[in-house]
Structures are given as structure tokens and as C-alpha cells.
Length: 223
Image 1 (cartoon, rainbow, N blue to C red):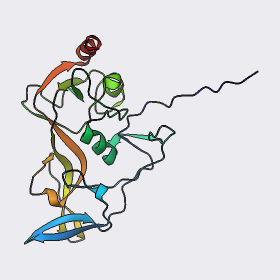
Image 2: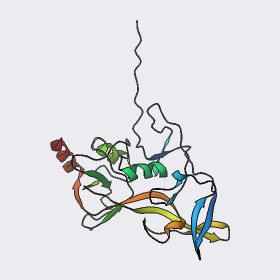
Image 3: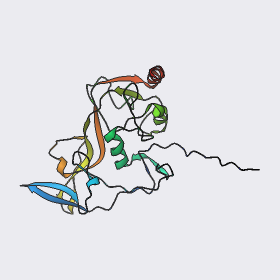
Image 4: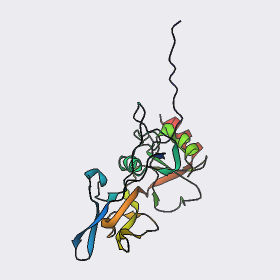
């Protein structure tokens, strides 16, 4: 009797989640003078991929093994996003769960905890990559930063705003962290040449706020 191989799908883990064994790279940061009293943070062995499209330096993090579909494997560290996978999905607006195109017939979908944002604010900043229509509900159920009924922010445009990160300078231990901004640092800020970024941030200023059931209802009728 011929045996049939049954392919077992791995448990769903969002693409951006950091995995066990993916660790910060060794610290070999340097400061190069770029003018009187001004410096630029760099790696001693810097690679062009260490900077984003706006020239900001990013924290390095190792990559673990992937499966035959090219997806990360290993035990998920649920409360951590891999900085470079977060940057990649945010930069080109890919789904944080599957890394595929996130745009839907209604626009881009961003999710937030209802108690962390005010939908009446004229502008909302988010470090959470968008989600595609197929993974809206799984994202709400899996992400520890959300609730099963998150606030949905539906937008046609989400311009890049800046980064979350820390500022470096000279201290008692040489090149070290000297500034920890409380919020995102906008692109163009004078601190950015000495910042080591860990998350990319987008700006939502023209959006519709709704519940998850309302979004799913509209998506069904938009197909």
C-alpha cells in the first residue's frame, strides 16, 4: 500500500516576531567627526545594509534558520520584533504576519490597542507594520500588544515618520548610549546622525477608525 506524506503546517507565528537564538550582534560602534562638535555613528565594519533608505544606522541582529518556504523558525520571543524584519515590512508596507503585500481593496490596515491611541487625534504614530486582509484576525489573536478586538485604523496613506532608537556619544566607557528619547525621532532631526535605530515608525494622519467586526464586514463586500 502506497504511503502518502501529509504536510503539517507549522503553527502561525508573525514574520516580524524575533526567534530564540536571534541575538544582538557584537557592539563595534564608532563615532566619526563630521564637523565642529558633530559626529556620525557607524560600525567599524559597516555594510550598506546597516542603514535604511534615509541613511539612519540600525541595530544589528542575527538571523536564525528558515524553513523551506524561507520563513523564520525557532521558538518565538512573542514580545520582541526582529529589528530588521520590522524595518523591512514597514519600509515597503508588507504584512507583519506573512510578509506579503499588505494593501487591501479598502487601503492599508493598522491595528492598535484601544487604550493606547485616541482615534480623535489628528495624527497617530505606529511602529506596528500593517496586516493583510487574510491575517487581520490572526494578528489580533497572536500579538501580545493587541486585544482580540483591537482598534482598526484604515488608511490610504501612511508616510514614513522616523525611528525608535537611542542616541550615542562619548562617555566614561567610550562610545555609549547618552540619550534615550521618550518617543519616535522624526527623520530630519539633528540627533539622527548619532542614533542607533531599532524600529521604523509611520504616520497615520488620514484614517478611519473602526472595530474589527466592522472591518471584516467591509472587506467581505469589497471583494
